[in-house]
Amino acid sequence: MKLKSLEISGFKSFADKTKIEFKPGMTGIVGPNGVGKSNIIEALRWAMGEQSAKGLRGEKMQDVIFGGTDKRNPLNRAEVSVVFDNTDHYLKANWSEIKITRKLYRTGESLYQLNGQDARLRDIIDLFMDTGLGKESFSIISQGRVEEIFNSKPSDRRAIVEEVAGVYKYKQNKERAEKE
Ligand code: ATP
Ligand code: MG
Image 1: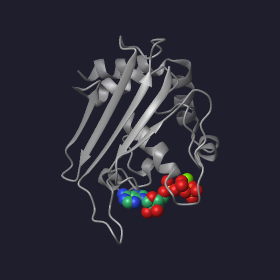
Image 2: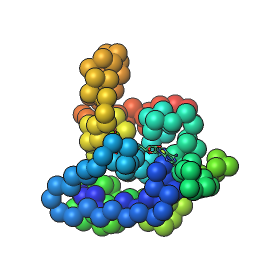
Image 3: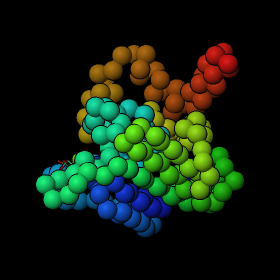
């Protein structure tokens, strides 16, 4: 399973549609402070279902929508698509290529698509759960996260271990079943 491309439009500093293709090997993104390097990673996390506005350095989720500059008006919609090569079927789906799209409008209306079909957040979360790519995994470590892990409560740290060990999914399913 490999990250193939990321298409960002109206998300944070990326007002215009920007496509980033990840070629085989390692990719480094470099640039001066404030050019939008972290915004790229946040776009990826957002498309993968990030639910915390604070985790995206905002107050509310609509803060991810391009907010305008001196020269440019704000936009009404943020849209990010991420494409994974899944020829090894590491992600539990039949497709050999998986495209996830997330859109959010200023009105608060939001939507996800999986390979062009409308999907629920739960479908996206299920796709990544127990793959090591889920929300609490170590696959994406942001600035400040290292200290946060070391300083976290034992119960929070336990949740990280459970995600890594692959029991988190069953816990979630159990909680869901108990509610339904
Ligand atoms: P550093 O090297 O300091 O970590 P960086 O390259 O990671 O910098 P980012 O934090 O990704 O930079 O980008 C910050 C820029 O994104 C700021 O200029 C900020 O104004 C802009 N930005 C954030 N949210 C929005 C938004 N909703 N609309 C427009 N611009 C935004
Ligand atoms: Mg940064």
